[in-house]
Each structure stands twice: as structure tokens, then as C-alpha cells.
Amino acid sequence: MITSTSNPQIKRLLQLQKKAKARDEENVFVVEGLRMFAEVPKNRVEKVYISESLFNRKKLELNLQDFPYEILSEQVFGHVSDTKTPQGILCVVKREKYDLNELFKVENPHFIVLDNLQDPGNMGTIVRTAEAAGVDAVFMSKDCVDIYNPKTIRSTMGSIYRVPYIYIEDIPNLLDIFRKNGVKSYAAHLNGEKFYDQEDYSAGTAILIGNEGNGLREEVAKKADIWVKIPMQGQVESLNAAIAASVLMFEVFRQRR
Amino acid sequence: MITSTSNPQIKRLLQLQKKAKARDEENVFVVEGLRMFAEVPKNRVEKVYISESLFNRKKLELNLQDFPYEILSEQVFGHVSDTKTPQGILCVVKREKYDLNELFKVENPHFIVLDNLQDPGNMGTIVRTAEAAGVDAVFMSKDCVDIYNPKTIRSTMGSIYRVPYIYIEDIPNLLDIFRKNGVKSYAAHLNGEKFYDQEDYSAGTAILIGNEGNGLREEVAKKADIWVKIPMQGQVESLNAAIAASVLMFEVFRQRR
Image (cartoon, rainbow over all chains, first blue to last red; front, side, top):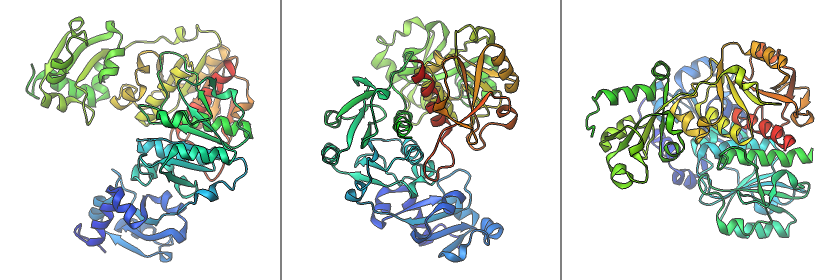
């Protein structure tokens, strides 16, 4: 059992929790909680860390014998946990690498593109909703929040394991690739000419969502095939980014059912 | 200028920020930031607190002469602010009281009912989205998170000033009142018999949304006229409560446009 916060494994875990760079270098991410552990693909588990009390209560039902694991004292677990009330289990997970070309092999794909999205909770909620709405892949600009941020991971509620996603250097160029592959791009835009439900999304569709405060960058918006608007009553200036994304993804899904 | 955190006004502000009970007793709430200040109805402002630096930079354009105000040193402002990077202005606002009977005077109203919703961010996002989707009032069970929680207020982005809302002791009884007033209630439910987009929402409509982890309480769900389901792909067990609410509110709004 690890009882000291100066143990090298604990120091590494803390780095992985706090720093995107440390996660990138090791090509892993950290998940926390019973549900995230239950849903993790077994072959991607690098190591499991469990608190002493959870180990004593649940070691059998968690099938820990299938994984390399380490027991941590409660105090040490609290130290490495990203949550206020830790469930007592966290897990270092190897990343899945998705290939851009593979993502186009779906017929009439349903994509979502996030341009400079900054809020970790929004990012996670969008990935979760994307899975529910049958989205085939999530594309993110390089300057989006890290999808492996602990709060993002938590907000995905496990969808991070199942929805393909990819960071893209040049989003305007991606929209050209979409066009060549028969995928129409729809910019969610306050100045959209059409309401979002006036378009037909039965062919290949990519929904473009911009930054929380500023919306889509001009160089991205101007490359989109169509600008669509979500109508709004009252004095609301814009919707939350995850809400706008969800309304659009569910309209695409609704039309396709 | 107030330069001490032991000043009685500062102690009171802290109580108002942190405790629902203190806010209830004084029948006020606290808003923070330039936008929330810009949109506050003037007749409801009880007092404005402004940091020294913001006062020096913007006293004229903020029209502070219209309100009772107090200048706080940066350190004291940081002490009472609920945000990590305070904008330097906060404001004690008198509450608006909405009357249940008045809320039924709208023809074919579009209502949303929140049953034991617990997350302050979800609550605020729902109020913001409700304004955008033309919702006429938000009904909340008494055990919902406090709508005057600082994080909720922030997430409403000003809609708190404009969307009527009311806490209700007995939600099952409310659904009876709905029925008598020609308002059909639709429970968002994983076991819904119908998909949400198969219903016609042109008559009076109330959407019922439950707790983040447990959904609607049985005694509420069983009183609803119809259970509707949002279809989900993949292995997603449920949507985030604010997302589910938004998909439904925007479907009602879409049909009514």
C-alpha cells in the first residue's frame, strides 16, 4: 500500500491529473470513479489505483485481478483525486488513436466540429450528447480545451471511450476535405440565413460550433457551406455552446430516424 | 471606501453569497459582473458594490449616480466575490414575486417543471435556454437547488430577470392544476412510450425534468399526462438534465414557430 504522497507513482499521477503536457507525453489519461472504471475497455487499462477502504469493500466485484493495481491510503487517494468526494478508484488509460481517413468510411456521416471551445464541462457534455445523437466523430481545433481534462472526462460519462474524436491543426482545410468527401458543413451562427430546422441533414453533415464567448472564428465560418441560426425569443444573445450543439445534433438525428 | 473585511456590510454580503437562508430572509439575491449589472431592472437594485479600480475606470459609463453604491478596496472586493477573476461589480437585487394564477393567463402556455434538480449550473442554463425557447414560466419543486445560488445566477446570463419562475410545494398537485387549466404535462422519461418529436405541443404544454441522477420522482411521473422519451444511440444511459430540457423545449418551440 502506498501511504506517502512523495511516492513517485503518486507524483506522476498528480502530474497526469493536472497537466495536459504530462498526459500528452505519456499518451494516456486518467479516469476516476466506479462508473468510468466499469466502462473502460480492458485492453486500454494501464494501471488501477484504489483506496484502501474501497479495496476492502469491493475488491472481488471489481475484478481487480485482471489489472495491475496499487492500493492507496485514504489520505493519499484524496491527494491525487480530482474530485471533492472521491469514490476511491482511478485508472490510467491508454489513448485510442483515430485516423482521419477512417472517419470518412461511414456512409452519410454525422460529424461535429468544435472551434476553440474552452469550457471542460461543455466539451464533455458535447461528447456525451454526441454519442446519444449518433454522431460518428468529434473534430476539435488544436486550441480547444484538452479532451483529457479530468472534468471533461467526467462530463462524458463514459462516452470518451466510444465516440471517435480527433484534434485538427487546420479547421478551414478540414472543411475542404469534408466537401471532397460529400459532407456539407453547417456553421451555427447568430447571423445564419436559415433556421436550423429548415435544412435537410440526410446527406453527410458536419455541425460547426464555436467558442463560448466569441462563436466561430471568421476564417472557419466563411469556409462553411451554410450558416444556420437557432431562433431565440426574449433578450437572449446566445445559447450555451453545449446547448446549441445539442439542439443541432438532435435535429440532425431527428431527421435521420 | 470600505477597506476592511470586518465591515458589517461586507459580512452581510458574504452571508448573502453563501447562504440561501440569508438570501431568503432578506428577500434579495446578489448578482456579479458587468453584464448582470447592465441588465438588472433599475427599480430592483438595492445597492451596488464596486471595486476601487473599476470605479476609477468606469464610474461615468456605469451611471452609478442612479443607485446607492459603495466602493470597496480590491482586497475586500475579492473577499466577497464568488468568482475567481472578479469583474469588480456586484449588486444586491430585490426579488420579483410571481403569482401562480397570473402564470396561467397566457394562452397555450409553454412551461417547464423541474423536480429536485440539484446542479446550480444546470438550473441556470435551463433558465437561459427557457427564455430563448419562449418558455412562459419555470416551476421548481421546493427541494431544487436555490435559483439564487451565485453560480445559477451567473449561468442564466441575465434571463433570471426576465423568465417568470416559482417554487412549488406539491408538484403532483401542480399537475392537477395544469390539467384544469388545459395544460398537458409531458414527463421526460427513459421509459417513455413515445418519442418526444411524435407529440403535438401546440396546446398548453408543460415539460417535466427530473433529478440529474434519478430522473423524475415516481409520484410526479405517474401524475403526468404523457411520458416522452428522447431516443439515444450508443451506450448512453441518459442525457445531462439541462441538455434533455433544452432538446424538449426547442422541439416545443420548433413546432410552434
